[in-house]
Length: 395
Ligand SMILES: Nc1ncnc2c1ncn2[C@@H]1O[C@H](COP(=O)(O)OP(=O)(O)OP(=O)(O)O)[C@@H](O)[C@H]1O
Ligand SMILES: [Mg+2]
Image 1 (cartoon, helix red, strand yellow):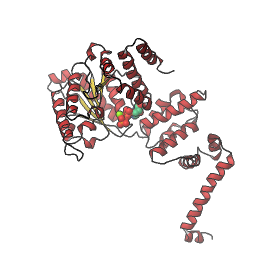
Image 2 (spheres, helix red, strand yellow):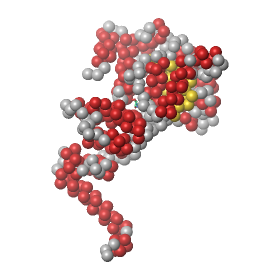
Image 3 (cartoon, protein in one colour):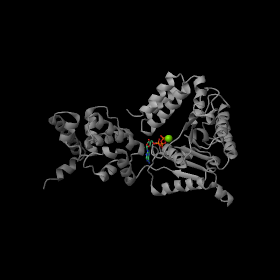
Image 4 (tube, protein in one colour):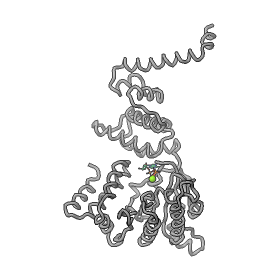
């Protein structure tokens, strides 16, 4: 069983009626599951933690020692507004194009040599904004930055910081920034656009304006040496005044072919199917994000483990990939027939009649009939659409 030690600690906490121990290890377990790609399970744990009664919620912080004794909480829900974690380099590795990797290393260097830079009058605030489409590794990069700097990560989920009580959001923000200054840490504002949406935005109802102003004030009051990382899927929604306060902007791209190959190699590891053509796999997965590749790899690994095999099967892996890409393109494949047609059209050389019959445990003739029917009706449509062309053909 994976993560048994966390589960045992949670059990210990429960048996000793030590809510703080149980909840802090449950938070750690959620982090680990998330980094394994099990987002859904991580979310289920966090949702339960979020429902913890007030006494537990305040004890949650105490579990981390005196430093975290007064973790900031939302007055309305009485829940912590930050998550504490200590990412390691092993669990936060992120593959990025060289130019972006170099930019990140430059940021790390600026943080590490902040004092020297300040003495030379050349320091910049230790702040970086990471932006890009979902699943491209923004959160993972924030974890990597903390691991690389050997600092704990204080994650603020900005959407949960926005309180239902008017005026409370700015107070929450203030507490978070005050708190982050009490311990060496990387303060990570995830889903930052929830807070930093532009003033004058049409959804703006006054509260958002106040939040942006409070954010600006808090950022200005923060010492330049405090490491602040913010991430967003919607860079264009950020208020320009906030945008300007980040000297480093790091774009997270949808991976190109070379990066996809690296991601497949890393994520499949020793479970990679025999005789896999990596280049072909990378090219077939055009448009896939790191999150998609991770998801498909984990699925294929799981199938291998459940089938008692040491390696994933190529066709099982390709089927998962094909169906995931179909979903991402908005295809609704609700029947086996639709799946078979899609896979055949997507990667014909792999999904032969025979392979499809074996994969779906169907008689070969049934698969042949299904796909030949399609071919027949496609030819028929073509004939109807281009009757003249057909007549001219014979010579
Ligand atoms: N470039 C990458 N290198 C390594 N792993 C990656 C990369 N991109 C994504 N992943 C993996 O995919 C999963 C999702 O990544 P992450 O949560 O960092 O994405 P995100 O950009 O923060 O997405 P969202 O906008 O949905 O929050 C993580 O488990 C991460 O390990
Ligand atoms: Mg994220």
